Length: 386
Ligand SMILES: NC(=O)c1ccc[n+]([C@@H]2O[C@H](COP(=O)([O-])OP(=O)(O)OC[C@H]3O[C@@H](n4cnc5c(N)ncnc54)[C@H](OP(=O)(O)O)[C@@H]3O)[C@@H](O)[C@H]2O)c1
Image 1 (tube, rainbow, N blue to C red):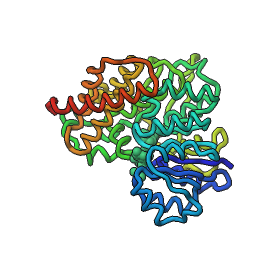
Image 2 (image 1 turned 45 degrees about the vertical axis):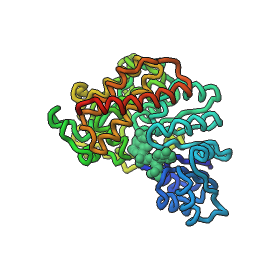
Image 3 (image 1 turned 30 degrees about the horizontal axis):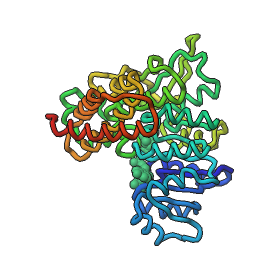
Image 4 (image 1 turned 90 degrees about the vertical axis):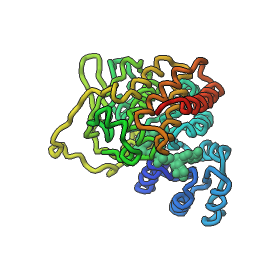
């Protein structure tokens, strides 16, 4: 029996993780939950799983939750302090980090420092501070286990053998909803259209990132830290069917691929229980019914965010944190219809170009870089013709 705490429990990944736990009550006990402001959903989750500790972002939200659950069984906390309490619960064996965006960094780091294995969906934490998180985990001999389907695929292929005989890894990308759009048409797409992902049902931030291909860029950086692979050996290929979740190319020329139905419950279950596999997580994959598997090069001119991520990785230090923060502001602005879809990349690029204080990755420096980039993005926005 594994004790699991989930931060980001009301989101797309958190909800899928709880489905996995509910399907295997003999394997998992949910001891802690944390989310932002969705009181109704977390109240339902608390009644179902009876965790010892639960956290919401604000005191008001926490009070609303406390009013509708059994407080003798579950303690309700709030704010970043409460979030850290859930991330470091003594009885938790593993923390699923599935908050979206940079808010995931501090609880993820706290969990690692508390000596927890972390199942990581929150890729932004690794993008911002990959060096710091992987160093802290290694120091405590704890694991950062990927939840992203691509990185889970690679971890499953490598199966603990490391990357000695690996020539490259190939991350697959669905290409998002605008794969066939011309550049002119891309400039006119609406948030509503961008939120209609052809394969995956996900939270808003990651869905927009998928449409710009920034998500794949973030995953390239994530892969560099999870597997210790140099950026030049991390390739991206568009694979619209999302059946192959990633591939590993070995020095002898063999390429191993991981295939399954596109359903996040697969990688979540593997992150929580691997290398042991759980039964009946995914619908069977009938390969005779898959008419074709197609692959194409990403169009980096049409989707410049991918190239920006390689650039941030090459610059190293604090640049990925700057890129991440600028991207979060840009996505927000696009969702609020303040900028066009194509301005997302332009805004990120301009903020990266203005960054002059690159340096060592400490927590303080990362947080400062994040704050600087948000302010810089607001300044660029005022001057930009978008
Ligand atoms: N969805 C996928 O298929 C998928 C696949 C691979 C990786 N990922 C990654 O997994 C992460 C989560 O994605 P998602 O799609 O599950 O996002 P989502 O549906 O938007 O869920 C985000 C979760 O984080 C919580 N949250 C947000 N800000 C918070 C804060 N300041 N304090 C506490 N909780 C906060 C939200 O709570 P409330 O809703 O209650 O406010 C919600 O529970 C992202 O980093 C994403 O890139 C997602």
